[in-house]
Length: 547
Image (cartoon, rainbow, N blue to C red; front, top):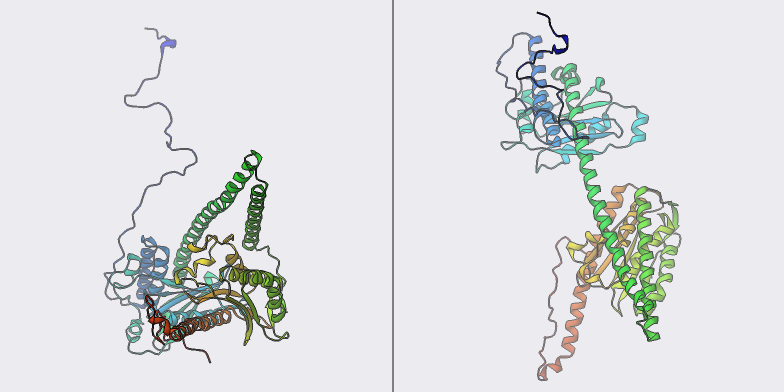
């Protein structure tokens, strides 16, 4: 039978589908990968090993298996890093472990338990940084490495990452050291460099001296290399998590900042538009009223110009493009110049503006023009919030290696919960809305101070006034720790003075009540009694008058 070639077709297989298999997903999205759960934690069942080689191999297997358990856990990267450091400490029989490494920035990390005093941990990390493997020239050029305290859960309620290093001792020759820590408070440090990982070193704290050879035996090179790999993985994850958190915080701050700026610009623009529409629409017939509207419009334009100027200043500060001419300058000349510029405003408002400055030869280190800008902002704010008849003082003094400017006022003071917030952008106290300003002066002043290795803060007591304190380096640069310590001492001194000011005012008020005691015989007048003090704040025991 002839076959018709034109009708010849391929056989159709039942159940087959024509076409290609494709991954159905939206364009631009990454593929969905399967979710793989972490395996159960490793459990060692072997009790004893005869040969030394087998014992070392078993210890290496234990360290690697438990390090993988830490890395595979669902705990945050910070807890996993703390778990790895505890695992290394228990492997060598130490009380604590720390790590230091050179990268883009040399940093040290040490694990601490929740609620533990970090002083002892800081001593270990600082010792490790000082004795770490690097040349003397690099050590002198880099200075001290920043120390990160890695807080991780521990104990019975620990997270999986930390609990797996607490569930039983590892088999190692130095397990007796960990049990002797509580009985012997003497602390000894030891270091183990890891050459295969670059300039990385591990530091340990022991209860008794441990030599380098013993430490190398407890953590052989292969085990140290595994530890370095695990630490590298978890520290990279921690850096990524912190970078993501920082980016999210910046994005949220940027969104808030843009919305706040839009509000600060829209509000005056609405008023300006209203005034101009009334004038252009011919609805203002009185020339005096028209002139008043034009004056208000000019004031609105001026305030908007100040806001734009402050925004540009903030942008330069954040981008690091502010040009600072740092050098020694006379404290007296800077303070006198600021007082002379603000004296007309003080006279117009009926406020006494005084200065207390050292001899002209006493100097501070900074950009004089920027220092005068900061002092002008602080003194202008003091004049705004001081009632007529009050006092504003600009004081300059030298304390050891630092110079201090203090701007005091007789205002109402700042509540304790508002003192840290006044340095935030656009932050203004609820009862200060009537006072003109952009809400950016104090943030700019503090940023400028910190650009000059200085700092700015405030001491205030409600009902007594405020004292804004600017601490600068003296004739030469000083460490930031000295600046912070001097600022804290100055705040304590000013708070004592402000509290004593309230007491003096109350005593004077009570004395006046006693002198006017004859009025108590009049109808409707209540005698307060001589020497009676009302609503006096208590002075804390830590606030002693400085010598």
